[in-house]
Amino acid sequence: MSRTRRDRSRGQALTEFALVVPILLLVLFAIVDVGRYVYSWNAINEATRAAARVGSVPIRPASCAAMNRETCVKSITRARLVAVSISTTEVTVECQRQAPNGTLSGSLTNNCGGSNPWQANDIMTVKVSHPFTLLTPIVGQLIDSGNPLLTMKGQTTVTVN
Image (cartoon, rainbow, N blue to C red; front, side, top):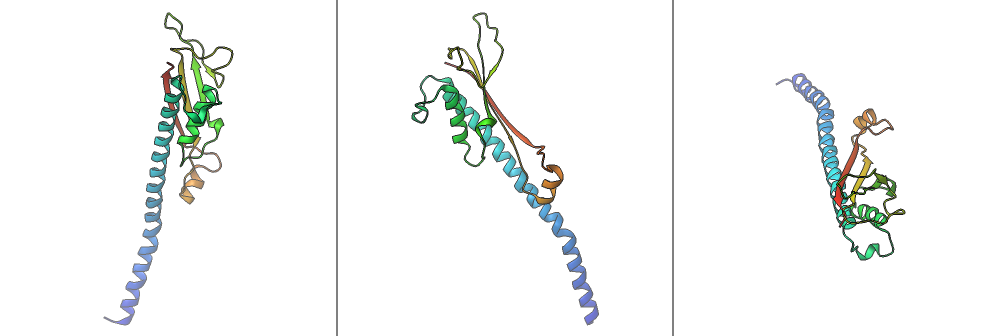
């Protein structure tokens, strides 16, 4: 094989590599982003379930000793989300009072203890809404561009005992 032919095949391999690597990296980062999204979404839903469970029973953990029920629910939600950083404002607690005939009152948000203390058969809903940011540099800039389109939401509704 002549030297010029060997040099040309090296150039061809380098060109093919340069064309394939960006696509390969984009697929790799997409897999990582999808994995992060699924993990975060699952963690948010699990945190709302755990917090709703704590808020639905009259006995609360020692970490909530000096807190009212609503503040305790928000605290438990944040404590359960280790890998997903959320603020207290991203957690809302809604409650509805159930009348003896089964009809529900209007929903109160973040004021469930208020003037009427919690009663048995009240309906409590814990919600978390958190924006998700992509790690993929180019796709993240094209899709999000300062205004995240991907928002993870978790919600759990329980009856208060």
